[in-house]
Length: 148
Image 1 (cartoon, rainbow, N blue to C red):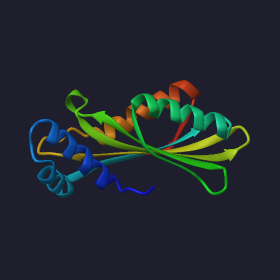
Image 2 (spheres, rainbow, N blue to C red; image 1 turned 30 degrees about the vertical axis):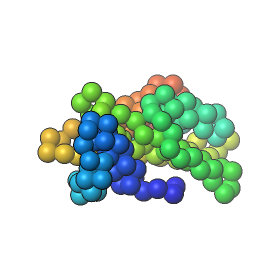
Image 3 (cartoon, rainbow, N blue to C red; image 1 turned 90 degrees about the horizontal axis):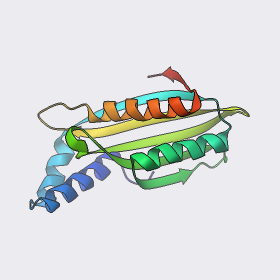
């Protein structure tokens, strides 16, 4: 992944600030100083690798706008990163990164990470987004949580 979560979040918040008439540059600086809410979930998905990649792309694609994708060197791992809306009214940008790894012929592992900047009022947008997307993946595939 070329861009850091912090840079993507700062850029997204700056764009929101500019739309509302604020200074995008000032918002970008402040965003870099804000704390980050991060949540990670590991899933074991009972799907072959290609099917698991397709499913993860579908769920994340509906959740937000893709900002980066990166196939692995071995052809047995794939990473996608999207920016989704979280928090109150879905206005807080959340960077969601999913990495799909081939476990065996019939199953795949999915590492899901969601990160959002937190203001004075803690919304836990990263955590809530990760849990929501993991639930969507689990419902569709019968996945098991391998750990949080």
